[in-house]
Image (cartoon, each protein chain N blue to C red):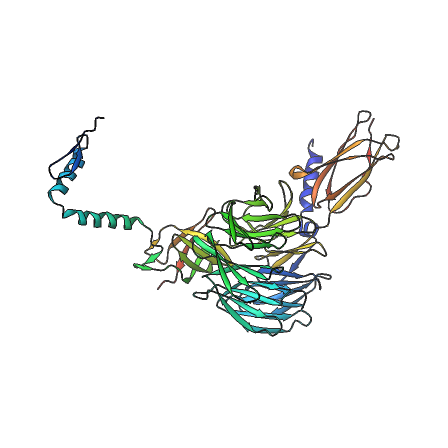
Length: 129
Length: 442
């Protein structure tokens, strides 16, 4: 592809081979430099949205604290303790610790929190209230 | 009917795997045994029973038991054989129960919130307890003489302890954070703590080789074992397998064994080179213990809470061999009595402790001609499961011997001779066999 670089009278550089969208963005920005801070804010907010903040319940972080919970194993309701840690969750069951993962870090229903590892999956009813 | 002998042999083989034959005995204990320790001086075994809030004391000579009430949810136990004191960490009570081994009298000490692990430095008579409760972030240090408790601050969520009694250094593993964690080093002389950064968290297992002065900490988040060389705190990373947790050191052979729960493997680390091999184990390996006198390694299985009822005990025999012995249901913790060479395994769901007689067996016999004369310089081959193979040559009287045979497995003895034909003999070896005669057929 032929890429011809040229500079306009305001010192902006563009490429003739650029796509229509790129050219449109270029001219939009060139016409209104004030849009740059808003674009930066937009990009940052998109990036932040993609970054994990750990387990949350009703918008509040629940990382780093132990909660009591129950789960059903072979038809029997077993008491457990859980501690959330980002995507991970420590499940204390019968005195043993199992390192597991949350299926969804945003917990909407504390009565149905699914955790798993390579071998097993529990649906927890966690006392988050 | 063609396969009748094989069917009979199979039935005999299966029938032999009852607890009494395989394990040498099962001792009933109170509810949910979850931790175990042995006093080799008194030959007593202490079993913390979580739901019963008791410690069952097993007499290693008679296998009689007695119950000692302790605090709520005992989950860790340690013995000081020098003072004959037993220390029990009670998770829900946030206490440690001190049991006098001579009288079973108890004393209760308040420690930090939710203690998870406990270990004794027999040289200094200090006992260390990890406090894993919210914001506890500490290790309690008990003076074994006065029972006074002091607190040493650590990073959050201390979970495991290893002690180097030679250097009087205590190493604490943490389960906080998936990455950028640390091992906390406590100087036993001053009770000052120093963080040793490691990349991964969730160090459920930590162990020390006092001969090489190296510390080994598992990380279930990075699937690694971190090797800390002391006193420089130099950290090297050894890749293990999925979800390593328990770890044990054989200081005699400088081998380290890490159990990978989700991979069903055990990573064997050569302590000299940090080279590794991953050995397949039974399903859901959970705990590991070594008898440094014999070099045998014992692997316990996680039953519940790992969603499985039947349990097995693996025996690592050397380079790539694992034998599975049947245990009972529930997660298993293992203690070794090196003096009696007995292995004790908790079966948490079955409320029992399996006793394994780990003595080796031998097979001695003769190779005879059809007329009953001893056949000398004849090659005799012993083969067993998991690639076990030994070769012996007969003496001038036709006598052969195989030693160092792990019991409770089927072995086949065959003779290689150009002059006579011999039928191979297969035996289940539960104890030494002294007169296995191989007689030529023609």
